[in-house]
Image (tube, rainbow, N blue to C red; front, top):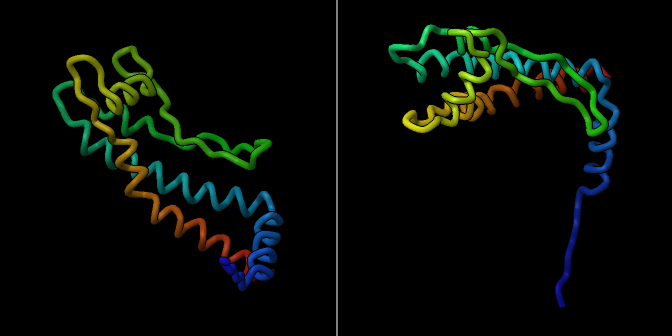
Length: 136
């Protein structure tokens, strides 16, 4: 017969209740800080990974934050590509560079940037959350 023992469940439930009560302003500040870090990381990787005879810097210059939005499932904050270059939307150029096309291999600068930024973005959000919790 197996035996399962759980300790610390009460503290975990209290912690989850606190997370559910995070005000929108704190959540938005956390997501803004994360988006700032991801935007800079994507600009950096676009500048280094997309070098070539046809690259004019438009993709790196087009990376920007979208708006913070509350959804039924929580909240979201997109990083988007704005503008045009060579008569084509920057978002389309970024997509083709990220995933490639026939005769052009993928250069996954977005995936690389997001993977590099995950630690720093998480720390930035955690700092804002800890500061809010310390003032409660």
